[in-house]
Figure 1 (cartoon, rainbow, N blue to C red):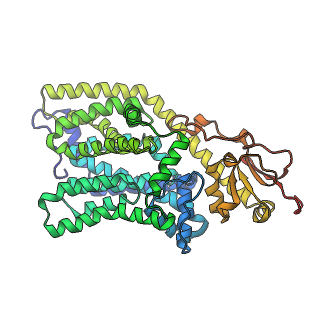
Figure 2 (figure 1 turned 120 degrees about the horizontal axis):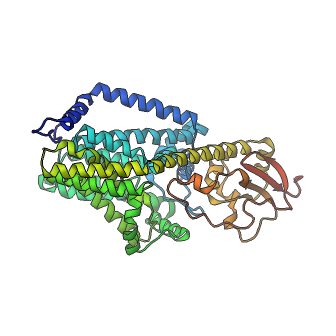
Length: 508
């Protein structure tokens, strides 16, 4: 049993005690390595069998990383620019040396980060509440279809979560550990700014045991991520707060900003993620039971939850996008709480408290059983969404490489794309400049010449099949988006995309 784990019940060595003891006996290093090896093989098989590609933000990270790798400053001045993440751009710059494979390697990196996150969450829960609770809670993390899809789309959120919970695990195993925890939080702070608050609060927690010299060194490490982020924005754009202002502007364009009161009202919905009833009801009961079992040792997960909720409200106050991704830390703790709700009673001695915990387990089991068909449906949605991403991206890459299309892309302007989300993908695949590409939603009038890339909407998946957390509001489109204008001639097509052109003086 790991140090610090709750001891098994001391009385009534019944079935529940034997169950918990059996789980602890199986939790050997050798079995852990075997399970991780099996999970790695399954993940690699999924990566190869169902190819997926980065999302909009991560494709821009690849574009900007390639510019860095070629000794140029990244160009953040793009239509509906995503938030830049300095460390993710550096990783993308290193991956760019692998050429066209870089986008797939970025996905492989986030899949590996997701496996690491599962390991860290298991060890975190095991250290607090034992192997049985940890195993069940981590299994429920696998029902988080949104997180699985983040990993399959190369999104920065997954390595960010790995670093934050990795830091939490180090602190849990040795309180006031200091430098290793701050180092992980500093890296996380170059991926998402929420880690800045975690680092600052952790430094306050360390303050009573630090010498003046240590306080100065650690303070510099806490200050480094925000200073580097501001310096990066300043060097690239001339505006030190570019990330804040541009993100606020894009949030307004998409209608994602909310008042603080509205954000607070969204918290139960966002905490529940794709399975709100299981996570909010069973997970919420499990969190209360964990607080009872752990007493003072619940301070760290409570602090993580409080900081996550506070950051979410601060995001709303700052006018930034109020979306479920920014509540994922406390939401993950709710997932682990499902494990406590179902198995926490095995760590308790006979008495009223255990009877109440058994009742919680029975209720939670009923809720999970009731919602099992919904969980299966979520997996179907994930399958449909990954299939859509595979087809859409592979067919886009294929049509861009058609000789007739490649010739047009080299000289015929403008190149009109149906939405802004296709721009960084085409830019990454072709090396074209942002000045060559226009989103139809950013055009005042239909183009009179150039290249027109049109999505074959008859073969696009229904929106509900692509969404794992509900149908999101579509980007604004013009009537000529995905419409073959009559003055343009057909050039090439496949099951997902068609290309039309009108290039006077070039035979088009």
